[in-house]
Amino acid sequence: MPLLLGLAHAAALAQTVNWVSWTAPSAPQYPNSYAPQGYTYRDGVSGSLLLADNATVVNTTLTGEVINFSCFGNTISDCPPGYWRNEGGWSGSAPANTFTSTNVPALPTNANMLAMAGYVPAVARHTLTFDRPVTNIVMTIFSLGGTPGNSAYKFDQDFTLLSQDTRCTGHLTDAAPLFRCMTVHGRTLTGREGMGTLQFTGTFTSISWEVTVPEVYSGFNIGVTSASFTAQSALTLTASASHIPVASGTSVLSTSGGSGAGAVSYTVVSGPCTVSGNTLTGTSAGTCRVTATKAGDGTHASATSNTVTVTVVRPLSVTYDGNGQTYGAAPVDSGAYDNGNSVTVLGQNFLQRSGYSFGGWNTAADGSGTTYAAAATFAITASTTLYARWLNTTYHVTYDANSATTGTAPAAQTKNDGTPLTLATNTGGLARTGYAFAGWNTAADGSGTNYAAGATYTDNAALALYARWTINTYSVTYDGNGATSGTAPLAQDKTHGTPLTLATNAGNLARAGYAFAGWNTAADGSGTDYAAGGAYAADAAGTLYAKWLAAAPAPIPTLSQWGLALLPLLLAAVAGLRTTRRGA
Image (cartoon, rainbow, N blue to C red; front, top):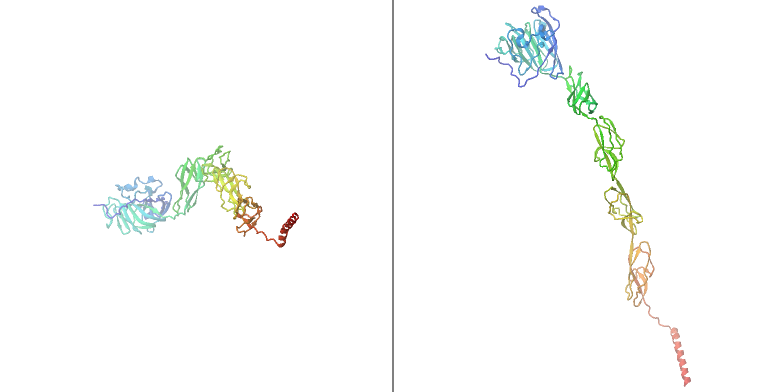
């Protein structure tokens, strides 16, 4: 005949079952007269189970009539070896898969089996209570019913029979079970020396059943796949030091948050560290990852903290680098520092670099890191190299307007050592009345070195430059202005602010019918007159024209003038006549 039909098929994946460990029953509570002689009973028993995390405990209480018999002595040896395999002394043996399946991969230990009876009406009802919700309760049953009598459990929850003795040749729906079989009718399980495993699927805090057909005993145990706990608040792990030296340094671990009364333990997940209590020690250089676990209690599940990283380092050192020095040697710090120690920065130690001045130390060769002056202090967290910080020597070039009447002098410039500098031009529009800007000079009076505006300055020295002024001159030219002979004087230059002595008519300018009368700023004589050899004070160029005056005609003599002119002639004529007469 085929095996029992209707058994639940195994789940695709095995589930972990956590079994209750029962406390051995104490003295009997009911008189022997309620049950067959040789057995004693009590009302209920307590127990607990440990979840798969090996830290979380679920407490369990069973009320109802249970038997205190030899298998519940103080030692496991009181139970026959292989109790779950050979029916505890009955003839024959149960096949290995009577109680196990994919859903139930392992059985409880022998000493964890209870025996039920139902002889006392007041306690014929059994109630199993958990101190928190549990999931998918599993019940293993041994020797339910006898031969020829049957026994039955009537549950208050639906259940599924996962497995039973494969020697059973009956069906779950039979009116009465055959030998070694169990049958299911609704929520009632009936057995005739039946054994196997059933499961209550879902989440429960209790289940109850009645022993509707009592017997001396039938054995069972309870397991669950998981339990519900209140989650703890976030557990935060911190380490007093994130860097510790090998062997000599420690980091103290501590937690905050979490819930409940569970103990806190610390675990080195990876890395060269050991932990004793809450003290972490590094055994060699490397990175250690540490977590904390706060165990669950009757209310809370266990909680695991964040992972903290602690770096174990060799003793820390400080090295100095001259960073391109041309003279001297970098100082040496022979100290060995622990993480967090204070370091005092050493001095220049005669270091020199041509064209540069010493500006302390920097954590980067190019000066982009942190700068420390000599004698400064810092807390070291890693071996550090300090590089000499060199500041390029600079020279100031200044500009002076040097009596300019308008405009502004250029702003000062900075020349770097060894780098040519382009001097400023006259961008500020410097001007001086009567003068022209002629560049720059190292002396206010122009007696120094001249530099053109925008010239290149190459000396490595500071420089003060003064505006160089050249005085304005004005050309005064001469024009014969119609002269018929002679030459006009050569042009003259008049210096600003200084009167010019004008030329005379040294070239003997002449003009027929005219007389030379000096100079005039207009050819027609309508301008300003200047005497030959006179002073010219105007600060302006110009042309001076010869000034000509027309010659006057001879005057007509008056009568008296004519008389005076003719009188001698008349007198001479008279005298001649007299002489002639005498000779005659």
